[in-house]
Length: 225
Image 1 (tube, rainbow, N blue to C red):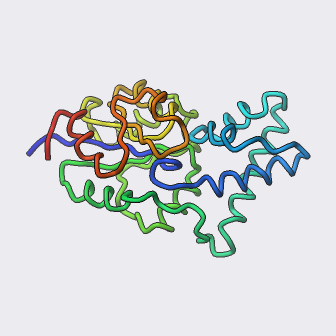
Image 2 (image 1 turned 120 degrees about the horizontal axis):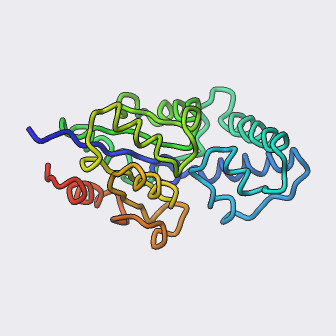
């Protein structure tokens, strides 16, 4: 049997299209402080960072106290958007994402993980909402790690699974994902449907659909399953 290999997934902009929720929650957070809302490209440019780091980039003029207020206002708005049962559908999965996850999960040699700027609560809700329970053997979230592109989440996923870096890949849509994967010593796969320009994120391989993912994983891990 071939050695185990690991595929680490970003979430926002890679597996799910969460921009509607992100933009609405950001608008609410800025309004709570009487601050003008920033444009969509600027907001989406920070997707993947932890909330504190994201607001530090978006609002370098605010102090630590006001940044903490913005972070909490964003979290509150995001939770409100989910509705009273927490299951309002505002972040659909991208076409082919579910099928790709199930296909890879069915391979005994392939392990799946998540490395996301979401909180644990946010990731749990996403997994529940889309029926993805049991697919990810390692779930790394912003609550317990430095913000991307620090490699802590990738290193934790490798440690959880015992997979060597040369047998692992990071899949994401932003330069933060690619920089994190590279710093963790794993191959990087960028997606063209996300929130950063795929041509400039610095991925080893860029794919235009989930159909191309298995071949990209094979190429970077040196195996064919």
